[in-house]
Length: 499
Ligand code: FAD
Image (spheres, helix red, strand yellow):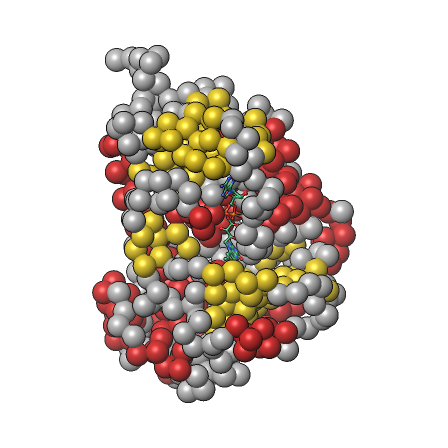
């Protein structure tokens, strides 16, 4: 069996040079650079969406696969460290909890740790679930070490992600890609040409240049220039579950010392992010235009900054959902062109990463792409829907009475899979990770417990320990964590050591 020359996929054109375009270019150049001719077209007059500063730990694998040095990456992107997301006012106003990366507690047998914590609570213990999270305790103390095994501690190291300037990350990856033979073309696409079959043949720039290819990667952002405007792949609109459709973004002066976590602060008609970078803080308000107008949103955002704003707030409109076919004909959509959930759990850059990895795995040898695209689309749909449900959970599980947005979210009908999960947890404290799902059981537990869903029962195994045994175990664990945190260096000193 041989791939015939005529039918081979050799020429790949990436349309768009935002985070999605340059992450895709860098990885394809790294893995398939010898096999394909790679071009990227972007337009300075259009620019990029200019937000997207918080990530999840998997990005470390992406950078490692590219062979990027962490210190250089942090320097070039003015990046910092993220140990979790602090959710404020999400259950009730005044509440605060963290979705901290990494484990909470330690395994005690077949039942997961949170069952033992629930058993202890039932027996009168009043410790917080997060007393047993190394990531949480380090985050609150402003401490950090990248070591995977911490010295003089039985605990595994911290799990971390980054906060960074997405524009600088794209520029960093552009340099990386251009050093690996990716050809960048500056220009505005005026027209897309199709073959009689319907496949894309070429894009035509306003200066008349025609860029043809065998495979097109649509990284054109919310415009979805190829996948939707040309190929009409369709869109699953999820606004009935995720009603926010607008964001106002504004940078403010940095506040030192920098904290190693994202803040997601719920307000009347939406929520606000606060992302500390080395040189500034990224802020934004995500809201639903059904429940809050732009002026109210602007006032809410500006009156909740912790330092002077560095620019006027910039508005971005979006529709939550996903492209029905992320790969259609000879076009694969990656980044905002493939859909957008919303930034609450910092998952968009991760969705770019996993789409790029999936594309490498499913890379077509020939121009007959139907079977590969079907599999790519199946996996992408599963991934998007699982993340969607996790994000909906935050909105739904609220007890706020101050604003119609929260009431709507509390009362809305849920996707079946999420409703079943909630029922299972409510009844028996059980939560099971679905195959290949991004978020772990412990991520779900933190949001469920953090937003005040106390289950009716827990696993009977947790009653196999006496109250004294439970108390002893928890006290020891707490002590180990606090000793470990005390010995960690500060985030500030870590960042200084990288500069
Ligand atoms: P864009 O950045 O919009 O890039 C589109 C590219 O296409 C540009 O280069 C543009 O020039 C080019 N282009 C478009 N049309 C044409 C044309 N006609 N001719 C030539 N070129 C063209 N993600 C996270 O992971 N973490 C976060 O904290 C986070 N926060 C976010 C907050 C908000 C409010 C929003 C809206 C998104 C957020 N995201 C976040 C998502 C993140 O910003 C995007 O996933 C990421 O920036 C990728 O964008 P993109 O490259 O797909 O699109």
